[in-house]
Image 1: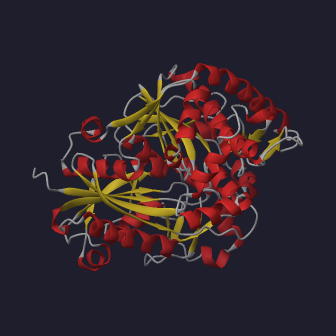
Image 2: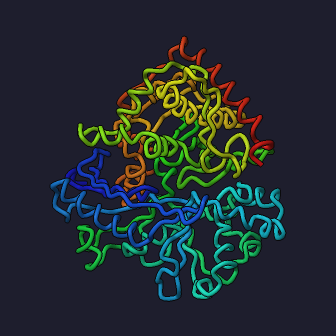
Image 3: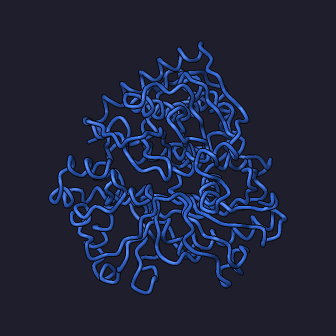
Length: 507
């Protein structure tokens, strides 16, 4: 196939959408990003404007193609890496019923958990779905049914972000990947099909659901004239099934087998280990889900992860943000420079960075962010360092739990916003006490989506072939054993604090 051909990967994320044009060897040729807000109508409630996201998808496509300086006719296909566990409700005509979708970080599902538990036990739910009741926010649709009954009467179909935005691009139906289907809590994860038992338990038997596609990158439509004008994608460009964002990020980082753990740390933080069979965790803390074209995955996650550092930026670092604007630099760079003035262990300060509940060591939606160990000698550098540490400690705890099923992972491949900071990457190596690899392409979500499209288009034979041709390691951070010991003490303080507060103060 002519090497001057390209694929577009769209990463529809929580804080913004980035579209990237890739050549067939996985090199970035052009990209564009548009940010959009989240709305917080009440504490714990998180919503986003569906139209703003759709517009961002279209506009970033057009800008990325322009920035790439290529001819649109050379683009073979497009695919989406989409947010998971956020449901879009549409009527019979395909119009959005609720302009603001309830986001995956929203906690109002906790208000109706008891309704679900009256219909099905948590043990049975986990046995079918590989995730506990309340692990994701599908229950918010019950909340809509109870609290917005007139709106609910208009609902004909429950969409994931994957099938909805593929349809907006021009897919000839509503198609979803197995991971995105899993995130709306009605999937038989062993067989990758909708579970009639769970659909009845949630009370959605009268609503349509998307068609589940197991084949990676399957072509589900093509770009028509109207969308071509708005996106810059050529008429006839193939629309291919993608995957949930974290699955695309894992794939785009090379997590195609159990030899490498892929750790994604951005707004959402999670660790993924590929497995051949859908095992179950007796404690029900580890999630088992499908992995488009690659069997299944072990997953454990942090609801906030690096977004806790964004909170720190927005609420406690106005001076740094203002200074960064004057200097024309990233405010996070200034914040990590401040953190570098502290030491491993943050001079005794411990931060629990579970700002929207915990989903690792203990699933507890009541968990909140907490600082402990602050004294009159504590500096801002210690607080900043403790926030960075707390995020990594939570990821270490997640990895240790998963290794009970998968065995010790020798290498962690890191992706997400944290990879922009050398200090943070070294902290991951020291706290996890393993080599941390960074890939050449940092936009792993968009790359994973493009690789899926490449499989559907016949550019790559399968997932392994796509990874071998598109993924290259650019840097490796090795653990420093002196710092490893200091961080281990800090990690034990973190675990003690978490165990002491959960079930007592946070309950």
